[in-house]
Image (cartoon, rainbow over all chains, first blue to last red):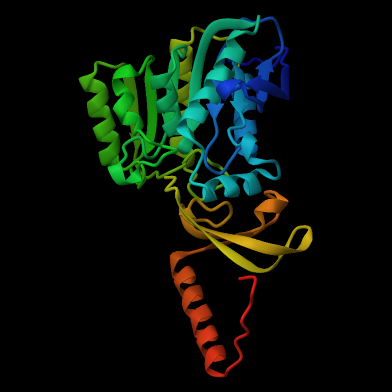
Length: 258
Length: 93
């Protein structure tokens, strides 16, 4: 718990990392000042893009004692305002799953290569980033915890599969390599509570470690304070669960925050 | 959820964006998360010119009812113009 006489400092900046196929992409990094060791978290941004909410949330993880990094998954689609770039990606049906997996793996390796790393890295994502979190935690070894916040299309019908998203993440469940925390809203239409239950059944079937929470009176994106979907009570409880889960699985970071 | 429902058409026209008027070459229509409208999903229309980068964009986010109303209004306007003999054939469209 933060005490008012504690020193507190943070380094937050744009960095370059190697992503899918060795491509250099940019990323936003935030970490506490000091030698560490710090556990790491990769943040996978949502379909509205590599936006202010994601840069703020990257700093939030650093404030709580984590070395955090959010790769710009839309780097190859050009530069402009986050909205303009995200609109371009939206029009093109999103980014390819393989590319996302490669970029997030690159971010994880970047964190692990830091001399201040404690050797553990988690992955966090919301919306499309929640879906990508499940995908990456299943296809890449090296994560110690995964947090899926209302990721839609983890369960996909055959009609929804595309060349860019050729496999439903639920079909990789047997390969999930770390504990999974899922936060969902009862009023969400994607994922619906039924789809979340289907995912849960698959996790049980394969004996995976997971923790799912379904919030009443909440829909899609209930953490987003800048959207009508924000639900204060559910969001604050969700954040508590996020940090408790990370502390449990990434070993105890420096006691900070609040 | 992110629906990934999107369609594109080639168009020809002119749009006014943050940097002034520019030539429109494509229109992207999606039913997915809007950036600004207070809805989980909206009918989003982006008039763009891809050759000029992501910033060459005029954006509109509409409720479903509004989008249907827009379609009806456009078609009604064109029908009236056609009936009056006003339609101009364009080579660039």
